Length: 394
Image (cartoon, rainbow, N blue to C red; front, side, top):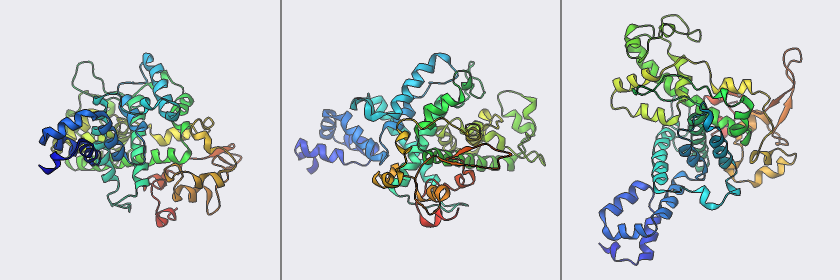
């Protein structure tokens, strides 16, 4: 092979330019020479390829997603580790460079696996359907989607639910994180560290996961209704209260499964990826049935409850200043709001301040901060896409 006769320095350059981990694996498996070259600096090579895959988003967010696995907030002993991890996630520039990259080969493999899962969801998110979306997102749009998915995974790992398994100790239940973290404490650790448009990017992907489960349940409803004994027989526990649709359903024919969606979303994007990649419809249906718990708690509810959240925290506090008209255009596109968010909250005028205060009906509502909550726009991703037409559908 002519490529094997190249000097070591050129072989390293070739390895550095490979598009993904799979290509790297294929080359080093096929060539002992390139395997030896790879072994000289395999960790650095993997980091460079991973960074190229994740694009404009640095590796801090996906690393938080893999390192937060198992740090359930309903376990009191995890609290200090959770606070430390989320504090590191929000201020990577203050940490040594070694803290911002995978520490082991195993973390490199986990990051590569996570990317494959998130990439499949990204492609699905960009697939045109009822909501017109570009099938080829820009690098900035792709970074917004991946960033939101990573943050959603981190949030679900810590404050979300746990997947049911057939182990004796496994339980089908929602998280009770609020026993160890106050609402505003949780908000400060995650959402107060993001500018408001990034919180809405998170909301757009939350709704996307809901929509995916709606489609899955529509398929199941064609087989049998939710109040049927066939559905109940698939579930690992018998709860008479779940034999019939909740008050969130239409109650007309027992087919409404949709009040299971929020619990399933709280299992995280990677669980949805597992569901979607089941080999058969029956396997997909059974996995859903094992993990379906009726829940009204959604991110939209959380936004309502946290209507007057704490002040923006580092690094989002850099946006909370009066000169944003001049400052925002100087930032990289991934750090700026997209046209849809800007148009909705600020119209055609400039953004003078991020945290605008508006007054609703004085008899019904006190002064509140208008920063997030365009839920209808979340259905088609108004905080994600940059297109002029999309921005003016508001």
